[in-house]
Image (cartoon, rainbow, N blue to C red; front, side):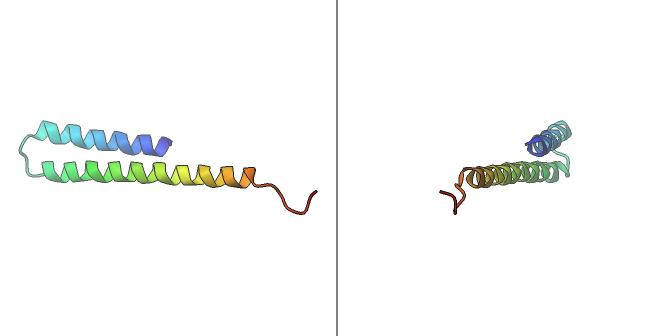
Length: 67
């Protein structure tokens, strides 16, 4: 989940810069970048969760042929 936290930090940095700019022409671009970083963080978290779920399924599945 470290990557997701990094992505969220980048998003916060973009929002901070945008807030400091006021009505500057690049403000909207920075806010769009922040939204993109947030989406990337959410996707990374979903991917990590899926990997964790798959790992759990493999570990908890009994092996066949033994008995």
